[in-house]
Image (cartoon, rainbow, N blue to C red; front, side, top):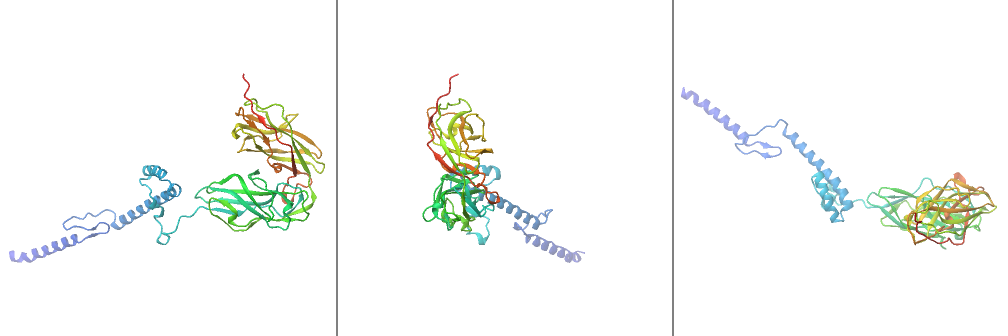
Length: 427
């Protein structure tokens, strides 16, 4: 019997040894070959599925880190102290920190050396530009060009000044003033054209466009009462170099407005004369302290409708000390304008809603009133910085094609009175 069992035992021994060799040669798809004699546990999920789940999870974490760190480094990468404070918050929320090397992490091989999109200012012609029209001599606030300035999402953009050119065939003396305006408020001084028919307009304060935002800027002109009839003027922004900003400027240049032609008719005129004020205003006296006084005289050419005024404070009082500014009649004390809550910089834009009509040949005395929050001992002077700051439309020559409105010619007489702010009355 023993001799008959020996071949069977030998065969079983060989099978066991072969199985042990196969087990010792097993290679795990993630962890590699198993050691000899180590039992291999078979998970419920196949090895390949676990492997790709882990790869996908790592990819998602890498993408999240790339997005977070790219935004943080683009904005705060130049300031190490701020970056350290941000990393403390990032570690607490996401479990990782950002380093300068993370700015280029996750890019494909062909984009590894590509720089981050630079900050830029893009300029385009607005779709609602003024149309080609004939304007009367002496017209003011004539729109000639409307531009849209768009800042990229990298940073805020600051503009100092812009150079415009008149490419029309008219004479430079036809245009007395050129200025820029935002939402009806003049943001630059009014300048005359140079001999080469160019004009460089500087913002009264550097104009800032927030990142990812767009702003429309209007260019207005005033026509001389003695302008040559049939003169043609077309204003344009010719090149990126004509815009002085803190980032590169892009756009399809030149950007040209529609042609403006001068008609043979002459619009009405307005005389604005400053009047004296008897009593100096007091701090927190009433909400109707008189800050300025002037007279408006309309000539006999046409009726006028006053739409808005831009007032400037030229004294030593701080801008935030004047509140609730509006225009009223001197005698009847009827309020004609909306109330401007406070000065914006050193300017106050006062709108007449509804517009205030005046007949031809009429004279009206008006007061600028408001409330003084503080400023005892300092001075106050409310004035019109430019003649174009009084916006009135004539009934005959102030209406152009397609609903465009043109202001009338304004002349400033005299000088605004300087007032000294008194202390409040003791109760």
